[in-house]
Length: 153
Image 1 (cartoon, helix red, strand yellow):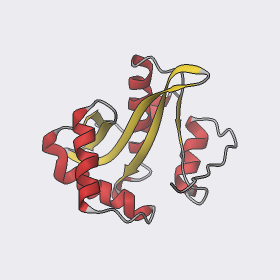
Image 2: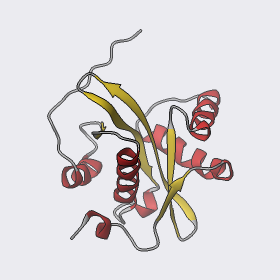
Image 3: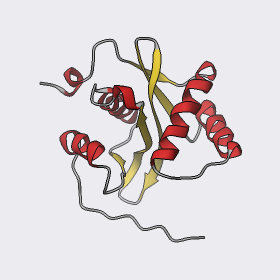
Image 4: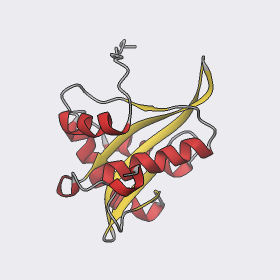
């Protein structure tokens, strides 16, 4: 079975557009709530402007039966050991469609964009306690054992 066969039929993944704002905001708020990250309205506004600008941060949506049910944000950057890599920064699916392949479809869409964008690697992070997501990630990627630290600035 190929990766694309694991996504539901009828799933469409497309870049986010201005008309998607209300549905994106609902999902983005769900994402930030899931990770217990307080986010001001101005931060959501800035994120949306970045996604629409498609210069530094890119956004992809997943539609099932005409409803935006998943989102992801990704970006490209240089690396010491590679000319260009792709970081999948945010990935979230609506609770009522989890387990139906929406996240797999979004990962596949970003992987395609990463290849087309000349990236040599696609990577992402998740919290250790996110067992549901990690079960998927263990099937579609390799966990290299890294642990992230954040130094406050």
